[in-house]
Length: 140
Image 1 (cartoon, rainbow, N blue to C red):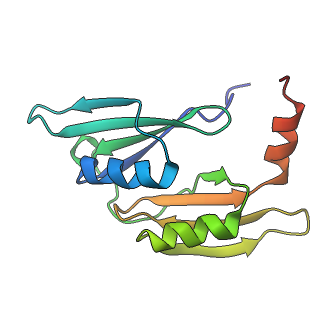
Image 2 (image 1 turned 45 degrees about the vertical axis):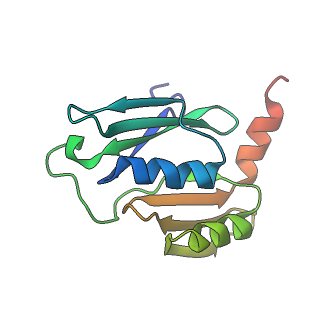
């Protein structure tokens, strides 16, 4: 199998320190790794979050690939959350903007939403019964 699991997602920010502070408040954990750029300002920070300690990287936008978009768009990666409504409400109260409203996806209990964080990144959240099934099947 070529895709074995989500590993790292990088979000871009013009002000890495401000983005790290925002995500620290939202996630309730501190970045476990930080690296400064040549000017001494934060250039990269990484959080480990969730059941599988997935990595959320905050990267100075100047290190983005050539032609990287600066507007929200493209693929949306969704994080499972237990209380979608409360999570979306909290994100919006912290200054995120709605990108995709809370949207039920069929009859199996999948519900998605997405916001644009204050730094221009799309943050997808969802309630995903399949995620819970996989988590429950893992040895303790």
